[in-house]
Amino acid sequence: MKLPHLPAVAQAQLWGLLVGFALALLVTERMGLSYGIFFIGGAAAWVLSERYIGPRLIGRSDTKTLALAIASGFAFPWVGWLAALLLQLMRP
Image 1 (cartoon, rainbow, N blue to C red):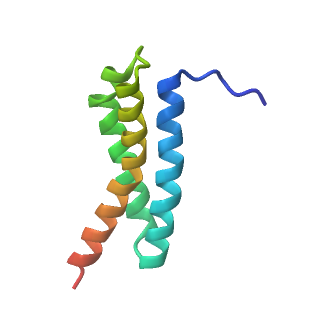
Image 2: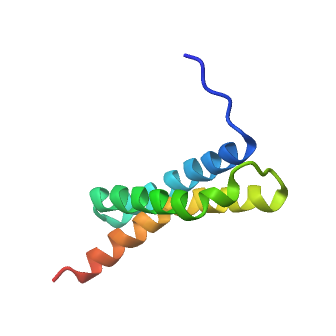
């Protein structure tokens, strides 16, 4: 299987996403939070980010843009973790 060529911004965002996902999943598991809410919250954060932050990243590859791509990729799973934590805290 041949992987497609990704631009530098997409590679940076993917790297941040993989690292953030691994760490957030580990914390979610250790805290006993809901995986479903974790995944849905992370996916929702990704979709909203692609809508609002994505257009700023397209076609650029300077250092500031790459740092924003890594940070946004790292943040997606943590938004899902935060949603799972907040909903867990709201349970009676």
